[in-house]
Image (cartoon, rainbow, N blue to C red; front, side, top):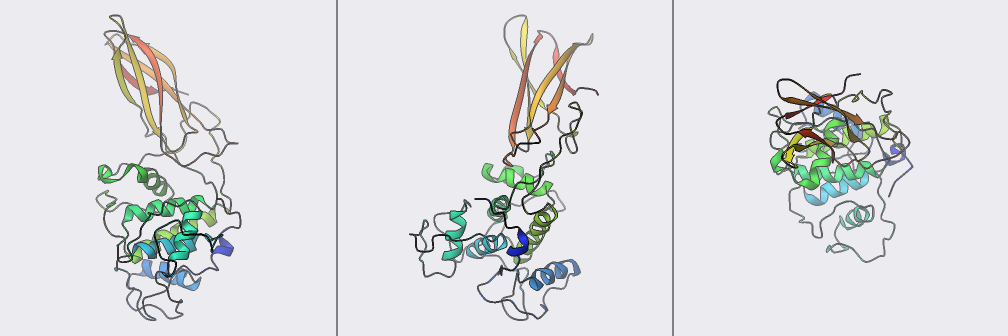
Length: 310
């Protein structure tokens, strides 16, 4: 469900880290100047409030219901069928029932059961944040694959969200290059991600925009220079091997094309390829997609992928 009203109206809604109202007083426990800017800015817009009038508790863990409520209210998601039967196993009397229903109606990946005392993980929050952003429109995607040291700990359903939000500069890795998907998300981390997400949506207009494709098809585009396809070779028969190039792209609009193969005297088969740019008039889901291209080479040569020269 795409919302076309923009974030200006949405910012009038209160996104609370708790169920209470916002305070006009500064929080004494937010000392870092950068964090203070984030919290004060969101508080001035009615976006966050504290656990008390004076305390924000930036290092406290965000609960699962609080995380859902924050995402819902950050992007103005509505519960259009308040009287409808709940789609989740949550009592309608709970303070977060309306937020859960609104999130479910807008296609967010809300679990069947939420633990009121459960701490929301970084992976869970990033998935919801990515889905929440997508309800406001389609946005440009930089084709860049970010290397994450603990990538093997990130679930397949979260990888696209993590990669795209890194490229949008909405989230960041720690100093060691880890995402820490299973760790609890703090209230300050959640506020910072929301702050960055709202800033991103506002800076790109209420309905998003399309990424302009480079005019030269041989130009891989900004952020794509570091993407080198993986190469696999399989035997076809005694005289022929099949070479397959595979690359990860940020959405299914991109493609991969083999332009030619140059056989070198040292036994290398240089496979020249081009990254095919997406149709600028089309909208694509921000889902990391594997694209492939194949060609045949003579037996005895070792395949090596190189981008085609301009």
